[in-house]
Amino acid sequence: MDLQTLTYIVVGLTFSLYIGIAIWARAGTTGEYYAAGRGVHPVANGMATAADWMSAASFISMAGLIAFKGYDASIFLMGWTGGYVLLALCLAPYLRKFGKFTVPDFIGDRFYSRTARIVAVICLIVASLTYVIGQMKGIGVAFSRFLDVDYATGLYAGMAIVFFYAVLGGMKGVTYTQIAQYCVLIFAYTVPAVFISLNLTGNPLPQLGLLGDTADGTPLLMKLDQTLVDLGFAEYTAQKGGTFNMMMYTLSLMLGTAGLPHVIIRFFTVPKVSDARTSAGWALLFIAILYTTAPAVGSMARLNLTNTIQHGEVGDPQGNLVYEERPDWFK
View (cartoon, one colour):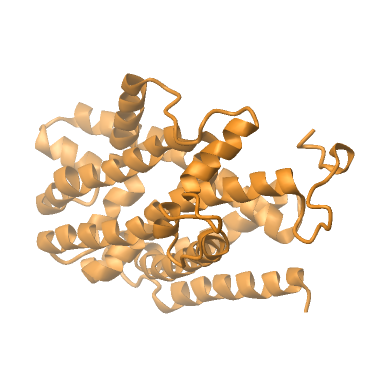
């Protein structure tokens, strides 16, 4: 069986699982459609929240940003994680305690103002549209690569599948679909990370491999720094931007992610306010698995790619490739 066929089978099975769960857990009442009947277990809700959080930006782009920008890309790890902590500690439990389903409802009732409610709705629409544009771009890229079609066709195919199980199941169906999605995502992310860590450092845990030594006894990050400096680039671990700029960037990421509507609504699906706090803790744990793996994936991928460019493809008897044989993007 060739790789393309195997890919179709595996990815097809995952989407069949999502659609099957959506049919099984389809909403039967208005409460189930908008808030899953407020009956989701905190651990399950934490897993669904983590799947919400680990969307296109985190899953597709973050390791690439870290590989490309090095230390400076840590602002995304700090900002997005810090934003979730801000949301979990300062916003979500109190919104849940107030008893409303949406933030505009909370704002309007809390400040006794229809104008404040309208402003909140406008902010909600702007934030949602901005975020959905990024998500749709990720869906289009992923599906176009998977199906080997143009971007527009991949986008429409992905939208059709998401539309089907989101509309059919409502929040109840989406919640249990996201639990399955988290398992698929974290498996797909960590398995390659484990193997590249084993390949470069001999350590099966990428988090420890990042701080470990390569086969020749040189610390991985030190070897990456040396390799990039030899090629004329800045050190991977060096801070290239100003500290103040990094602080402001991190703060903006924190405040932005703390207000993500699709994450806030997740805390309305559990039975009690205390469950919302517990759910936030579990979600942070599930998110941390990916967020602590991403720096290792970025660093190891950068070193692996650079070594391949310097010393040739695996199995090349000469150990290097002449300039004319290198790919166009390298030239």
